Image 1 (spheres, rainbow, N blue to C red):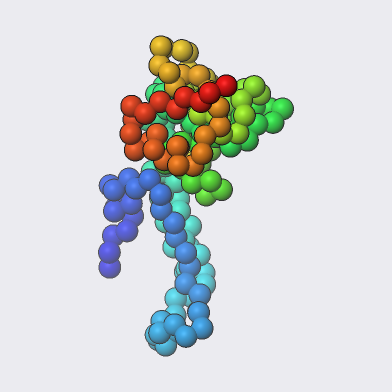
Image 2 (cartoon, rainbow, N blue to C red):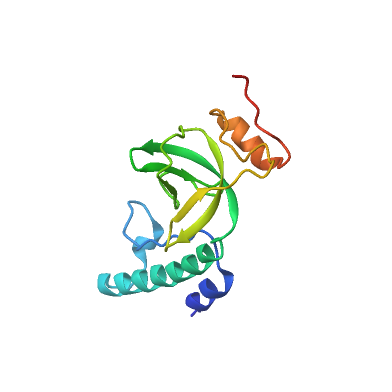
Length: 160
């Protein structure tokens, strides 16, 4: 048997998902003898997800104190919510900027990570350091966002 827990701990993968088997119409796996009982599937699922959560806690804790650029997705009366270039919307973790109500969806903001939990980060706007990206830019297209991350020296300038 493969030592999955050792692999998860050592590999420190950024994104890991786990699914319990369920029969699918036409799948050859349906013909296998001795299916794993539901309670065993659930115990394995929980153990796997707990291990990955521990990895996520360690990895996100390493980001505290560091700066990153965040794409703002939402702004409400409590502040702004965004994500890094590595985070998919509605799937991966979020970056919360409490109290930052002057931002707009689509803004890219340089932030300093203040706190982390199992899946999310809390940040504050980084102080301007002469970097053209230190202040929010006007909303950009998905193509601009992709180009920005592929070419780190690309600065998103928009005419007023």
